[in-house]
Amino acid sequence: MSELGYIQNRLVRAGIEHDPDGLLAEATRPGMPVVAIAGEQAILHADGGRASAVLPAAIEAETPRERVLLGMLEGRPLAGLLYEAGVADRIADAPSLSAQDLRSIAVQGTVPADELGMLAQAKSLLSWHARHRFCANCGNPTEPAAGGLRRDCRACGAQHFPRTDPVSIMLIARGDTCLLGRQKRFVAGSYSCLAGFIAPGETLEDAVRREVLEEAGIRVGRVSYVASQPWPFPSSIMIGCWGEALTEEIVLDRDELEDGRWFHRDELALMLERRHPDGLITPPPMAIANHLMRAWLTGRAGPAPGA
Ligand SMILES: [Zn+2]
Image (cartoon, rainbow, N blue to C red; front, side):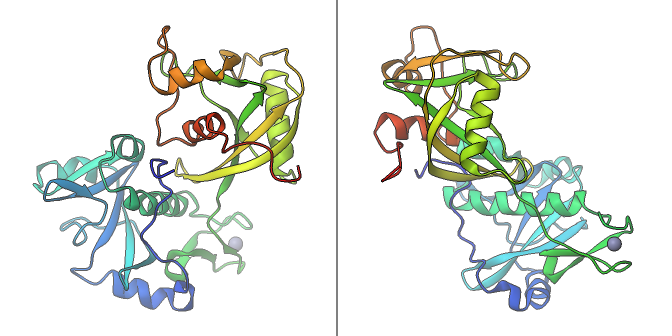
């Protein structure tokens, strides 16, 4: 579980809504540590041998476009700052700073695992601010409020809160086999769990059943929850499930999947270990699909008690 990316977060969020503006003002004083995002990249600080997501201070000579309160770090408020994308290039000469996208940071383990969560949080929240500058109700400009935990519209009084988009992702099993598919954009030989956004008014379980029926023509019966993962591209939560296939014949939706088939558990084990004779592989350990596969192989994913 510890290898799953973005799930550990050293920040304490509980209670910050009591005085978010006061805490943000404190967190953005000169010389206070910050988390910084520039476009799609995180700015990291070289802390001895290893990079850290926490910069000792805001970047000199650059003005952030957005400032938000993220939470409390070791008793002190921590702000997230959004810089324009060009800052990631302009810090190239700074000896202690570097820029890297969040996927690479998680795959390569560039920062400690318990700092990935705060990067995901900062990226999602700051991206939301950058993309919600106008009121969805009346079209007038909105402005940050409550330390950046909200945006308000002065014209119509609407309050807008950051959104998280739920995505179902599922390991579908039938006896000793599981259903995996690949999209055209995947790296060569890579197969993964099926996944899809949960529709308005839909349960998680029905979303799993609908996605698998749509993409692979397989009917699914029992579904149970396994684990979740923040996915800051831009602001999803991946909700990982196990599901039991009721049918076997696969009918692929070729618009969604380039290929899809049943894999025996022994074959899946070889793929996870990168020892498959045909070079087939799975997503890396930082991805929840990898976690769901391993959970199924070791008996940790299956029907909920009483299901
Ligand atoms: Zn409005």
